[in-house]
Image 1 (spheres, rainbow, N blue to C red):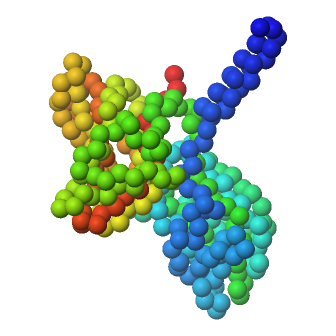
Image 2 (image 1 turned 90 degrees about the horizontal axis):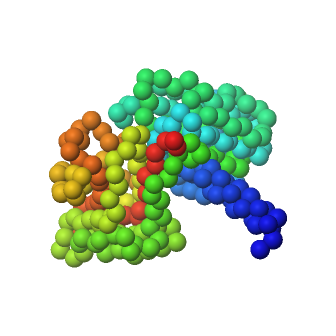
Image 3 (image 1 turned 60 degrees about the vertical axis):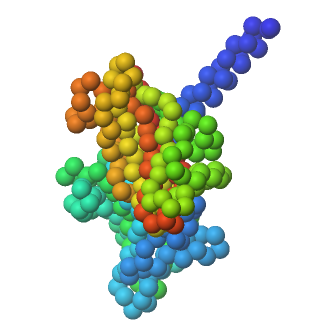
Length: 301
């Protein structure tokens, strides 16, 4: 083979791998999730011509807000991109609300009373959130004029993975690695839909792989939707010889959204050397969940 061609091929492949490693994990994308992702307050969020129009719910109001229903894990290096197409009237504000143990403990403006459209990008660590925030929520305000409104192209929140090594990445498209325990599993283009078998109130799927515990490991789990029940991610712990030691819940009785878990944690018995992952669904007989993604990452060395 021509050495120059070989060298060029290696450079291209290397660049591709570097790009793949530098993927941003998309935690939220307004243009994809649609108007159903938003909760109306004094403002409403409605799709119009493929864009999200945020306008005052009451034209006589001075200002009003609408916010994304889901909360997301707080990452200091998390990236927020906000793209507006047009300010119809008045001004707009973008806030990030910080939560700790399910309580709102901080609020920070990323954009305040802007009157010009455009793209703006932020890193969460620069927002000024304090008090040990573990979750964030995004809120948009409009005001400053009668019929104040802004047209949003997109609002995204993502985690850059270039500082991490991905140990496992499951999109729930092929389920060969999973053992089914009392669930009905159907794969779709957007993950796996799991439902309960008749005459059962809970069930689980168990990942066949075991992962050695390493410092700084994090598990990220995305449930796209869950109805008539809840879900639990459980870690099944084994010692160095593969003997079962203990199971612990990482995220318990949760509903749709992103969840992040750190492991190993202080609560683990010292003899636990590796873990398996078990995903439970329970509730009513009609309980159904759609698992979209599961990642295990650690800081890059």
